[in-house]
Length: 108
Image (tube, rainbow, N blue to C red; front, side, top):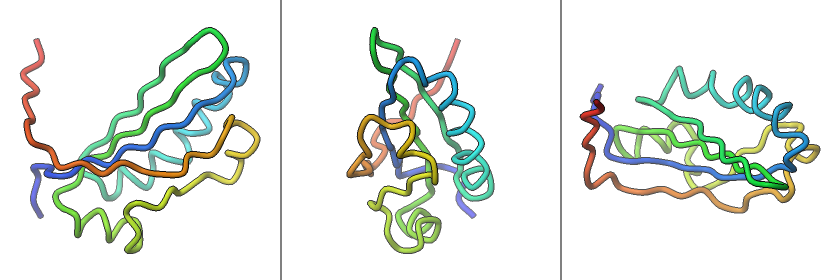
């Protein structure tokens, strides 16, 4: 199995600021376990603004085939968690899929 990602899949959604602390562990509990089993890696980002909070999930894949296997053939379909209607201001209507052109992670 390849260990270098060539594809990144990202999902972005926003909540009200007053429910963000509750949504974050819910998102982590529901979104991270399936990725641990299949993705080469992933990151969860949080951006707190005055009245809303944005969450961005990025997962990394060896190729489109590996990602399509994970998403059951629908890599661009948004997969929501059961309680997302309670938390999200609006449901995201798309997932971004990007080829990784540069992958320089020489963190210091």
